[in-house]
Length: 537
Image (cartoon, rainbow, N blue to C red; front, side, top):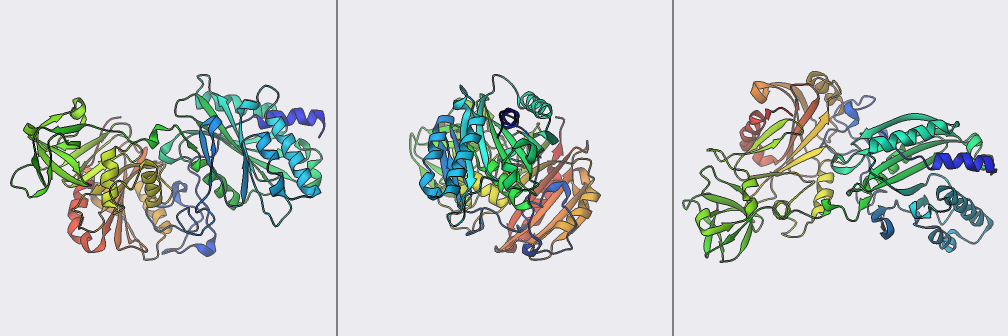
């Protein structure tokens, strides 16, 4: 590699940014069970949430995305998950230490020499501390090939936003002279819980950029695909950069997406549940199933015991609490409440509670015996209620475990999940019924056109019923109704898709209900939808 080429290449490898938002896994046709004829691409580039997944996902035991090993990079506070049969090095020294695993031959020497040269370009003198790691595929039964890997750079943000940093990087990319910018964007879609990323895709003429390396890859074209994450404390940009040699396959895009979405910040507060308001007992007392002494006793509580507050009744004289994974009630006169109990919602005269989401412009009401919360920011009480409802055992689930479960429930669209509802029942009851609430930008799509597209993309092993229903939405409006029997469970899934009055947001309420309970619960589920109201943002 010549000095001029080396200098030009440095301009490329310092570029970090922007991947397409809302990219979806592309599934081989041979693995696709369908209940209707599939069209070229699903609307909004998503699978309908809760529809039986097609192809491989991280939850399919034994699949290539299942059980990826994790690597801690303590110097930069990140945890990286590696695909199977990949190697990772967090420093040049760690890379050289991999020599025994690569074999004892000239090809391994050449691979290490090239990779070392590549890392030297990434981290010129004085900037070695910015390097956070490199990962690459390795097959012990084949010669090492230095293609289709990724590298990580951790750059101080210095007060810059993702938008300004992305603009700076794209300007560098365009000024390089031999890389062509394909598309750049800042937004959600690649990371769980709607986390913003800056992403960019570009192409490099490998013959020009890599000099002699192009000889070993005739007519090579490199597809650059980079993502920038911002640390929870807003202090660091983490660049995840992929170089895909030759034709960029659907498989590699899927793999890259999984690498990006699984990176974790070890100090992320999202992995530490909130405490929430509490009450402390002043006397020994009974815990009731409802807000009066007419309701049955569900347990006993002792003086000085503390419980998480969920809500209060309409009169304000009873507190609803989390009690051993159930919803219970304590009389207000016999407890001492923490100062933040005024943040707990208060039920209306019918016992229904309301959650306002001003950011997305809607208000959702839910009935007694249900709990609704943001799974991206759970409290300890939320985790206990969810563990009991899922029959995982009280205390057997933490915030990352909840995140993984919701990801499984939504079939990898947890970036769009904004709420989780669950029906709390006694310990001897079956696993609870659930509700997921999704929010997507409509991109100008009408409910009628969405119904048409959904009819062609409602994948399930049993036929899915898709219709544009009148009188189902708020204020006797319209909604798209999708219903089917969930594969491998005894659950009916009912999705209701609504369009905000300004036409900018598609909101989906997806219920998963025991099949033998669906008929009895359908009026209540319908009331949840009909009570939803749109509010000004």
